[in-house]
Image (cartoon, rainbow, N blue to C red; front, side, top):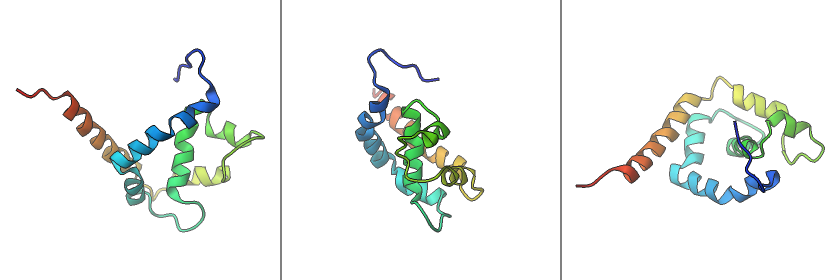
Length: 116
């Protein structure tokens, strides 16, 4: 559940977090990791572009279906593309999430470790 703070514009949430997302992508090498575990796409939109749109729908406080059926939708691909991407049996989501989580835990443990 996402709690909206007072004075927070829903449409500017994703735009304000782009720099943080780019820094996170560089730190975790998200694009390369995604391509390693989700590389069985042969045509159409790039895997990382689909993932990026799906990731930012969370920050727009809507689900993907609601954004795709709206009149002013900025999603460049059809709903079927996203659903096929998410439900593909060739994508190894558990390994992908484990790799990203491992990187994040290493980063946090380095920050919280106490040196004597």
